[in-house]
Image 1 (cartoon, rainbow, N blue to C red):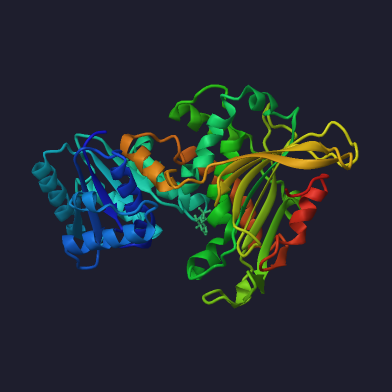
Image 2 (cartoon, rainbow, N blue to C red; image 1 turned 30 degrees about the horizontal axis):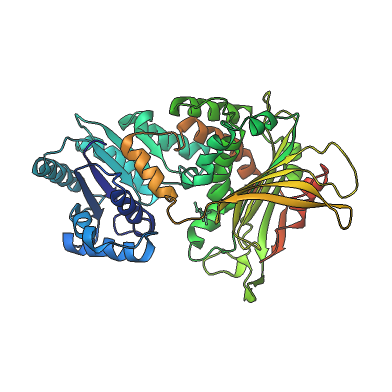
Length: 477
Ligand code: BG6
């Protein structure tokens, strides 16, 4: 890997502490870091290099999957420098350029620069523009920009944001993070199917009855009401994570795909995704919100009673929909997606339900269950005869790998960003097409054209989401 400077905007933020520092440390321990790297953490607070290094160490102790090792921690921390930076002030950028250049000369490294924007979305455009204006991003070596979600707050703002980034960086240099794409099971989808002809042969509409993608959470809105009450599940989870899971599941992996081919295939899927017709909005899309209820034996308040939520808010904390991909593989096979806060369990999974070819009593359809989160496993539901009762019983053949040696999503994504592999990042056309699919639904929510279904906290979501599948003769698995 080439030597580089890693410029982190938002070095004292929550994401840096929980995800970015642990990811860097684990990469370092595994020898997946450049020989020489300058990590420059930017923030407005007045801190010294030693203060930042102490914060990084504290973050590692709290959040790293691997224990901090006394023999290497000092060397790791010595790569970090703190730079006081105010994104609103032009002079900050000139000072930053000089600071990065000085450090590059000191370490004798080329001007390869990776800019990681872990900042409030409103700052992204300004920082990018200023990086260019001040010359910070004009390098002889490579430069890349990693941007966190949300990428825009609707179709129009996403396009504006992209146009702004494109004035400075080429698409190949922009790495839009969707941490679901870093999850091992999502990345394994390709290697699950391609080398297994048995699965490849089953992967189409002759064999599959439907696909179900669930991302349920037990947490509520927490302290994020000011953001979430405007975003709702549709912007927070569906436009990005869930549609990415749809794409990753629907892509056909006949052969190993290059990053460019993956991008094209995902784009094709999104182009084949049918928009929800206005007359189907209230039947194919379910909008829900949690009421008070109970979770792990504790009473929890209704969404509308959570601190920071607007009085009488109609915001969606639950979303489910039926999607149709009109291409040769998936025509006629419904994809059902759902996500919700304050549900009965934390679970992200992709379930492929196969067609049954008999209605014999007790026989259930075969299911391939890809458990993405929090545990990782693959299981296949089969019908087995219990010889003592002579009845068929569903049984699961399962494989799981929950060892702590598995790199976390951010480790994989940061590594890819450092080596310049954009396969598991969200490319612009996918993002734009996702917003295009979501936008009419957002508008309908805005106009209150889609009913709001309430569900008790701790439940499996509104009954309307179960009816969505029942109408087609299925049920959520
Ligand atoms: C984030 C959302 O992107 O993903 C959160 O903003 C959500 O609201 C989180 O809780 C879920 O991620 P994970 O990895 O826990 O499934």
